[in-house]
Length: 106
Image (cartoon, rainbow, N blue to C red; front, side, top):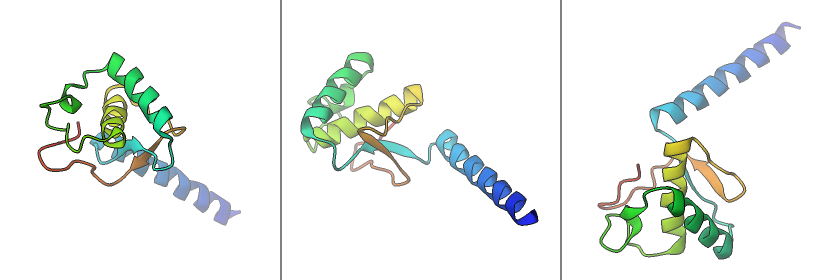
């Protein structure tokens, strides 16, 4: 019986660590590699209709590389930062900072 209690405590401790990483900004939410281009385009259109996506517009710090997946990842992470949503039907949490060059993810 003590072993079960220890396992539950460990699991509870693990979830606290994961939650604290989200709060501290050490987790990003990016496009899944297997998500289709049509899903990425729909997601990008929907999120940029709700959020300020100026950084992925021409002249923005995250415009290059000018790819659908990079732009969608930026918008997905911006939504994650703004609304706390990482929809795993097209996105995935990532412990790796996707920022590159002058582009700094929110």
